[in-house]
Amino acid sequence: DGGITQSPKYLFRKEGQNVTLSCEQNLNHDAMYWYRQDPGQGLRLIYYSQIVNDFQKGDIAEGYSVSREKKESFPLTVTSAQKNPTAFYLCASSSRGEGRYNEQFFGPGTRLTVL
Amino acid sequence: EDKVVQSPLSLVVHEGDTVTLNCSYEVTNFRSLLWYKQEKKAPTFLFMLTSSGIEKKSGRLSSILDKKELSSILNITATQTGDSAIYLCAAVGSNYKLTFGKGTLLTVNP
Image (cartoon, rainbow over all chains, first blue to last red; front, side, top):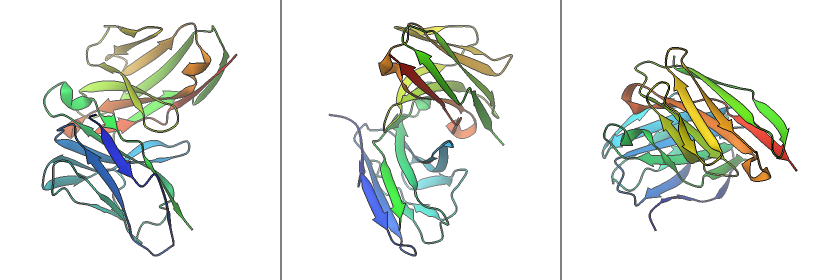
């Protein structure tokens, strides 16, 4: 089955620790995205990558880092510099090319709680 | 700064009612507008709109884009309890980046 997987589903972290969220897709999509969702805030873009070995900051990149060494994988690290990391994190991917580029497919999400 | 505003933020209706959800956008180099439904976890894709005035339809759901007014509406007719969800609107702009609205929480009571 083709799709996007995120792990873990739930993650608890102590303040001051870095943590990495996994995102893998087998849809052969070039572009991948990380969003953060807080109650009443909709989805906000953290980082995105249109191609392997390249990525750009989104609207709220501070305190986060990413890598894109493989087409299938786009891990997100939440660093201790992120002041309010408790949130629901969604990964998405899409094809490139006019028209197809726009539809993003989402993973099931990771709920991160900082204790 | 790109911006998408959805209204209302929440809505409670009874089964069988018809609802209209609104989305307005201000996005540089606008390419398209997307609607998603989010029930518990991952948003699922509903519609992509690129041309003004052309209605897209899927069962009881339909949507239309008005590029002159920089807005879109999502209609749901004969609502069912299974339609209860958050409906997200997103505008695609420069670099194919999506800007999402805050969503409309729709609750359909039996």
